Amino acid sequence: MTGILITFNLASAVFLVYVLIQGILMIDPSAIRFHIIMALSSTALCVFAHCLTMMYVVAVGRMIREAVEKKVLDQSYVSQTKSYRKSIFRAATIGMLSVMTQTILGGGVHTGLLSPAFHLALGLFAVSISGYATFLEIRYLIANHLLGHRVAHEYEKAG
Image (cartoon, rainbow, N blue to C red; front, side, top):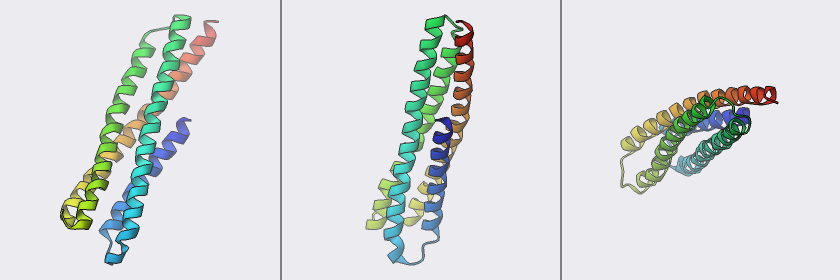
């Protein structure tokens, strides 16, 4: 499952970058329709990937906590997984909020309420924040996965 989540997160980041570049290179105003559809799609994938990652970390953390309690293993495993969860939740939430804000305010550009320059600046910010969140999520997903294997190994040894 960790590999699938990493793939979703990377695909989300690539899709966001694609939409940003597509918006920058847009010359023909009639292409706005395609940009809007792609922006909505990339936002949906981004939110899905971040949320799925958050829920997976909760589930793995719970399994680790239950294993530690059942076989009286080292409590530091629970602390570690809580630390990973906290970092992932913070990064994923900020990443999702920045991308959703960019997409929603993009409608303001389309209606003429906001300038394209503001939309571009916010887009660069949102893609950067979400990209950083993706980096952190992948890092902590791998660490949590390895921690889960360590706990499983000790669980089996404890009999």
